[in-house]
Image (cartoon, rainbow, N blue to C red; front, side, top):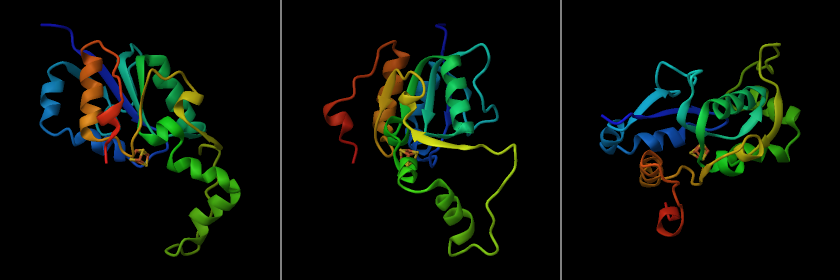
Length: 180
Ligand code: SF4
Protein backbone atom coordinates (compact mmCIF):
# COMPACT_ATOMS: atom_id res chain seq x y z
CA UNK A 1 0.00 0.00 0.00
CA UNK A 2 1.23 3.50 -0.83
CA UNK A 3 2.48 5.56 2.08
CA UNK A 4 -0.17 7.97 3.28
CA UNK A 5 0.29 11.73 3.13
CA UNK A 6 0.63 13.03 6.68
CA UNK A 7 -1.34 16.13 7.62
CA UNK A 8 -1.54 18.41 10.64
CA UNK A 9 -3.78 21.41 11.16
CA UNK A 10 -4.00 24.11 13.76
CA UNK A 11 -5.66 27.45 14.29
CA UNK A 12 -4.35 30.89 15.04
CA UNK A 13 -6.61 33.94 15.50
CA UNK A 14 -9.77 32.67 13.83
CA UNK A 15 -13.27 31.54 14.63
CA UNK A 16 -12.93 27.80 13.84
CA UNK A 17 -15.23 28.33 10.86
CA UNK A 18 -12.58 27.17 8.41
CA UNK A 19 -12.18 23.90 10.28
CA UNK A 20 -15.97 23.54 10.35
CA UNK A 21 -15.97 23.99 6.58
CA UNK A 22 -13.32 21.28 6.33
CA UNK A 23 -15.67 18.95 8.19
CA UNK A 24 -18.39 19.92 5.70
CA UNK A 25 -16.52 17.76 3.19
CA UNK A 26 -18.83 15.17 4.74
CA UNK A 27 -18.52 11.63 3.39
CA UNK A 28 -15.76 12.65 0.98
CA UNK A 29 -13.51 12.78 4.04
CA UNK A 30 -13.59 8.96 4.05
CA UNK A 31 -12.06 8.86 0.57
CA UNK A 32 -9.43 11.38 1.66
CA UNK A 33 -8.58 9.39 4.78
CA UNK A 34 -7.68 6.42 2.60
CA UNK A 35 -4.74 8.49 1.43
CA UNK A 36 -4.21 10.91 4.31
CA UNK A 37 -3.09 10.29 7.87
CA UNK A 38 -4.29 13.05 10.20
CA UNK A 39 -1.62 13.44 12.86
CA UNK A 40 -2.80 16.47 14.80
CA UNK A 41 -5.65 18.96 14.70
CA UNK A 42 -7.38 21.21 17.24
CA UNK A 43 -10.38 18.90 17.02
CA UNK A 44 -8.50 15.69 17.87
CA UNK A 45 -6.50 14.69 20.95
CA UNK A 46 -3.10 15.50 19.51
CA UNK A 47 -2.85 19.28 19.08
CA UNK A 48 0.66 19.92 17.76
CA UNK A 49 2.44 18.49 14.71
CA UNK A 50 4.95 15.77 15.62
CA UNK A 51 8.66 16.59 15.83
CA UNK A 52 9.23 14.19 12.95
CA UNK A 53 7.19 16.53 10.76
CA UNK A 54 4.29 16.17 8.35
CA UNK A 55 3.83 16.49 4.62
CA UNK A 56 1.05 19.09 4.76
CA UNK A 57 0.35 21.68 7.44
CA UNK A 58 -2.91 23.65 7.42
CA UNK A 59 -3.35 26.83 9.42
CA UNK A 60 -6.54 28.80 9.94
CA UNK A 61 -6.52 32.34 11.33
CA UNK A 62 -4.22 35.34 11.44
CA UNK A 63 -1.12 35.92 13.54
CA UNK A 64 -1.96 38.49 16.20
CA UNK A 65 -0.14 37.65 19.42
CA UNK A 66 2.92 35.83 20.74
CA UNK A 67 1.04 32.51 21.00
CA UNK A 68 -0.28 32.49 17.44
CA UNK A 69 3.16 33.49 16.17
CA UNK A 70 4.68 30.53 18.03
CA UNK A 71 2.08 28.11 16.60
CA UNK A 72 2.64 29.45 13.06
CA UNK A 73 6.42 29.09 13.29
CA UNK A 74 6.18 25.63 14.82
CA UNK A 75 3.90 24.40 12.04
CA UNK A 76 6.15 25.95 9.38
CA UNK A 77 9.19 24.24 10.86
CA UNK A 78 7.45 20.86 10.88
CA UNK A 79 5.67 20.71 7.52
CA UNK A 80 6.86 20.45 3.94
CA UNK A 81 3.89 22.30 2.46
CA UNK A 82 2.03 24.99 4.39
CA UNK A 83 -1.57 25.90 3.51
CA UNK A 84 -3.08 29.20 4.70
CA UNK A 85 -6.77 28.34 5.05
CA UNK A 86 -9.31 31.16 4.88
CA UNK A 87 -9.30 34.93 4.66
CA UNK A 88 -7.91 35.45 8.18
CA UNK A 89 -4.83 33.39 7.33
CA UNK A 90 -4.51 34.75 3.79
CA UNK A 91 -5.22 38.45 4.38
CA UNK A 92 -5.54 39.02 8.15
CA UNK A 93 -9.33 38.95 7.81
CA UNK A 94 -11.53 39.75 10.80
CA UNK A 95 -8.71 39.86 13.41
CA UNK A 96 -6.99 42.58 11.35
CA UNK A 97 -9.93 44.89 12.10
CA UNK A 98 -8.33 45.39 15.51
CA UNK A 99 -5.52 47.28 13.82
CA UNK A 100 -7.73 50.34 13.52
CA UNK A 101 -8.13 50.52 17.30
CA UNK A 102 -5.88 51.25 20.22
CA UNK A 103 -5.01 47.73 21.56
CA UNK A 104 -5.67 48.79 25.13
CA UNK A 105 -9.07 50.18 24.12
CA UNK A 106 -9.86 46.90 22.36
CA UNK A 107 -8.99 44.92 25.51
CA UNK A 108 -11.05 47.31 27.62
CA UNK A 109 -14.02 46.85 25.31
CA UNK A 110 -13.68 43.05 25.17
CA UNK A 111 -13.15 42.35 28.85
CA UNK A 112 -14.86 45.22 30.65
CA UNK A 113 -17.46 46.94 28.55
CA UNK A 114 -19.53 44.35 26.72
CA UNK A 115 -23.20 44.40 27.59
CA UNK A 116 -23.02 41.03 29.37
CA UNK A 117 -19.92 41.81 31.45
CA UNK A 118 -20.20 42.42 35.19
CA UNK A 119 -17.13 43.66 37.08
CA UNK A 120 -14.82 42.61 34.25
CA UNK A 121 -11.07 43.10 34.24
CA UNK A 122 -8.35 42.79 31.66
CA UNK A 123 -6.42 39.56 32.39
CA UNK A 124 -2.82 40.14 33.40
CA UNK A 125 -0.51 37.18 33.82
CA UNK A 126 3.06 36.63 32.67
CA UNK A 127 2.00 33.35 31.02
CA UNK A 128 -0.61 35.00 28.80
CA UNK A 129 0.20 35.76 25.20
CA UNK A 130 1.19 39.33 24.42
CA UNK A 131 -0.51 41.26 21.62
CA UNK A 132 1.37 41.96 18.40
CA UNK A 133 0.23 43.62 15.19
CA UNK A 134 -2.13 41.39 13.21
CA UNK A 135 -0.55 39.91 10.11
CA UNK A 136 -1.43 37.46 7.38
CA UNK A 137 0.33 34.14 7.76
CA UNK A 138 2.55 34.80 4.74
CA UNK A 139 3.91 37.93 6.42
CA UNK A 140 5.26 35.81 9.25
CA UNK A 141 6.30 32.52 7.61
CA UNK A 142 6.58 31.21 4.06
CA UNK A 143 3.24 29.92 2.76
CA UNK A 144 2.97 27.46 -0.13
CA UNK A 145 -0.78 27.55 -0.85
CA UNK A 146 -3.23 30.37 -0.07
CA UNK A 147 -6.90 29.38 0.09
CA UNK A 148 -9.12 32.48 0.43
CA UNK A 149 -12.75 32.48 1.52
CA UNK A 150 -14.59 33.12 4.76
CA UNK A 151 -14.69 30.26 5.10
CA UNK A 152 -13.51 28.54 1.92
CA UNK A 153 -16.26 26.18 0.83
CA UNK A 154 -16.02 22.47 1.51
CA UNK A 155 -15.69 21.94 -2.26
CA UNK A 156 -12.67 24.22 -2.42
CA UNK A 157 -11.05 22.59 0.60
CA UNK A 158 -11.69 19.13 -0.83
CA UNK A 159 -10.14 20.19 -4.13
CA UNK A 160 -7.06 21.66 -2.41
CA UNK A 161 -6.47 18.59 -0.26
CA UNK A 162 -7.11 16.20 -3.16
CA UNK A 163 -4.56 18.00 -5.33
CA UNK A 164 -1.95 18.04 -2.56
CA UNK A 165 -2.51 14.34 -1.89
CA UNK A 166 -1.99 13.70 -5.60
CA UNK A 167 1.32 15.57 -5.41
CA UNK A 168 0.09 18.60 -7.32
CA UNK A 169 -0.06 22.24 -6.30
CA UNK A 170 -3.73 23.36 -6.33
CA UNK A 171 -4.63 26.14 -8.75
CA UNK A 172 -7.40 28.32 -7.37
CA UNK A 173 -9.10 30.40 -10.00
CA UNK A 174 -12.40 30.90 -11.78
CA UNK A 175 -15.40 28.94 -10.44
CA UNK A 176 -13.32 27.49 -7.61
CA UNK A 177 -13.15 30.94 -6.05
CA UNK A 178 -16.86 31.56 -6.61
CA UNK A 179 -17.67 30.08 -3.23
CA UNK A 180 -20.74 32.06 -2.19
FE1 SF4 B 1 -13.55 32.34 10.66
FE2 SF4 B 1 -13.77 33.38 8.22
FE3 SF4 B 1 -11.52 33.69 9.58
FE4 SF4 B 1 -12.16 31.28 8.64
S1 SF4 B 1 -11.70 33.09 7.41
S2 SF4 B 1 -11.36 31.74 10.69
S3 SF4 B 1 -14.41 31.32 8.83
S4 SF4 B 1 -13.55 34.52 10.15
